[in-house]
Amino acid sequence: MKYEIEQNLIKVYCKDEFNPEHILECGQVFCFKKDGEVYKVFPGKEYAEITENENYYEIKTKNPHFFVKFFDLDSDYTQIKYNLAKYKILEKPIKFGYGIRILNQDLFETMISFIISANNNIKRIKLILNNIRKNLGEKVEDEIYSFPSFEKLLNCDEQFFKEMGAGYRASYLYKVLRQITPEKLEDLKKLPLDDLRSELISLSGIGPKVADCLLLFGYHKGRVFPVDTWIAQMYNFYYSPLINREQIRKNLVDQFGDLSGFAQQYLFYYQRSSN
Image (tube, rainbow, N blue to C red):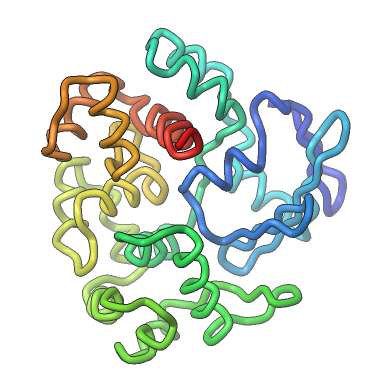
């Protein structure tokens, strides 16, 4: 994909492969907000603002190389979409979410975020995470704070997470921070996919759907298909009705193979937006 770096600026010219609304609003990330026509993105300690010009998108940031990797700008999504185009079910979702790219997110931040996401809505997820950032993070821009370190989160008791709005997930967060470290999460990369999935599900607050989100958005595994209400709804509309979400997941991975994660993002974004 064609892009240029000019000091504190990235110009992304391929609008048919990069659309910030599609990327940020497709359920894979929560560290952003829209301010008018500007998308503000703040993973970890980084910060960027994305605006649209006539011929390109402009990403303003002090760390352009970080955001080249974060937005996966060196991957060929034209080829990915071409490979998925043979599936009739993806015809409309790909046209609708043509600018989706799967982000390269920090593994630890992704784990905490998706534990909070369980049985939750995006507005509330972002509120809880922003509360945690404001209380434990460092100021990055006006009203925007960095994601706190593992050590800072480890020093918090369960009551703190309840006060942040996490509800029953507070106990999960407290426990998982005593089960795992960022280094151990990285070490798990060595495991085969099925073993890695089982290991994640053994952790507090991580069920099958959260594990699959972590595999896709944190570990960047292709043969995974997170199944939530929207995907289950989609499956039961286009395929033979099934209640068992684990079987739905297996069936979809069997169909889409190594491109399952990409297919999931197009289908999820289309299904939720259409409703």
